[in-house]
Length: 235
Image (cartoon, rainbow, N blue to C red):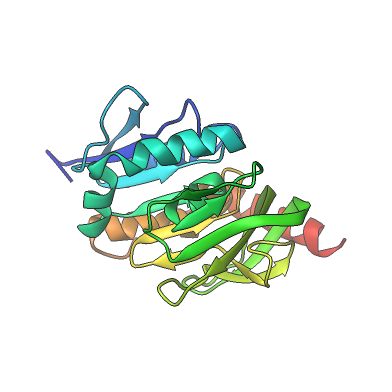
């Protein structure tokens, strides 16, 4: 944190904002403010450099060509890699997950280099995954929920662990979902993910603040989560 304000970097929202994942930044900001912390969302666009001094970084989902553009830009910028190496949390969704990996193959059949912050390779799958997704997480106590919309099949190497195990849906395509390496987390969960999964949001914030956070008493959030889980499991 700089000057007692938590800086939340929203990376390339103009190209990685197709599925509403920019809402993750607002969720983190509000959850900090509700606890008495000052917080600021810092958008980082294609015409600027990625600062290495922010406290947390977010990448969202995007279309295929936008994903390639974002990967090219972020590979050429040292800021995100420097921040991740310093232990600052990075959270990527869908295209963001694939960009954080070592390599992804586009619909053009061309392999594109990722950032290598996750030990993960993504290729196209035969069928597009468009459905609600339920995940039993490895790092948390409560199930994760979200909406997946992708045609990627992601294979993890030994340098990353899955975020969790798929209960319903597709995820990575092998029964696992997402990837985690140190404080770098990737997932296929849209929703936005951190609005639908406040425990995951607080995990990221605990890494920023350096201590565990007490749960917020938000009955409405838990009611909505329970309804979504019940509806999905009933199908």
